[in-house]
Image (cartoon, rainbow, N blue to C red; front, side):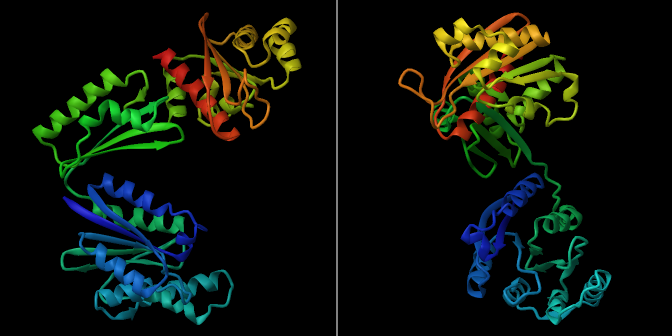
Length: 406
């Protein structure tokens, strides 16, 4: 098994000023190319700390270093890597001419420190960067690869995809498996199927939570009879214990899964939204081809507009209130009458932080779904910030509707 380490250079990463998206990007790509990432380190623009990171990471067969290739005094990656590998820095004439041409082209005076970007460890392969002046480089030492990439996101991704993917592609095929859940917590997923989660040199598994979605991700590094049995036992357990929460066995977003289901079943849809304020409509129309299934939507935030646009009765509002199963039912019925869609979804609730009561607390949300004449009204109790409650309501509507269509 080929192993890799990632080192991200930059004091701004440690202060929280800059989000470190490089590790996520590189680890995801490397895994798909057959490399198992053993460590990720972020360290400041400090020689001693960078040398310590290199010493630790050099236990792996591949070390990727990001950042610190600029022209300023704190950009010391090339010097530190050269020292670590005990190689001198030499000027590359092609890189030097490219830098000079760049400044000439933009009609700006070039300062002398820019010439530092033409220095590379002896015999390094230069990784041309067409998106900026900081070329990357690759050094080979003792059957190990050391790759340095520029720090800016678009430059790093350009250099990696243009020069490194082919270099790092392995003959061995690595297989990925995913299970995506909604409406269940990470700990309960672990409780239900934890006994089937096995990690060894041939297979790795992990449970991850993000934006109310639980992902069970598996990587099969080596195909063996044991891994085949492990995967089958896990799949059987998921189907038996967690099917009501499962929405996909691929690496797909819930909103995309819902949209794809609408397309594949040619199901037309419309929305009536109160507390979510158009979030359902906005998310559906993110995807190209939405016009094939999306009829339209109304945002009826006030009681008056619930009456005007959806024919919710004043008696219903007076007796039960806008946040009630009865109001939600009339909203979905009025929506169905207006758009005649195959599926109609209505949402009404209290997103907070004010407006709640003992009887109707913040986070109480009703979701009504009419699919070809059959109605379902779901009462939900969400917690968290206003943004979290609204997002959870939108995702819950997508999930409930997706399950109805399955």
